[in-house]
Image (cartoon, rainbow, N blue to C red; front, side, top):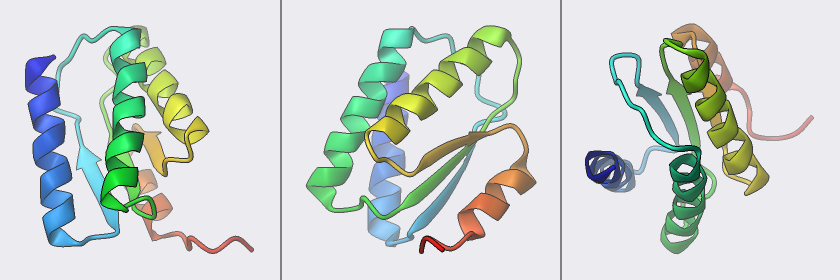
Length: 109
């Protein structure tokens, strides 16, 4: 979990420094086995960080490899928790689907 926390800190710092409004995070090579509580805490922490840094308008697409049902369930849970906190995070298995979502307009029709 310490490596995960450090990785997230570095990503958030890079995004903040870049000023980019849309982020595509390719996690297909990443292997992890974290608890459901960790995913819940991660979404809570990201919400606080984003509110503190005033970056709530950024869209983040996370692309991962579906290696096990547990990984699928865990990442779907993370997306649900994040979206329930009004965070614009989406989880994808296909890179192209993530790109399409990131390019969609943020203005409701």
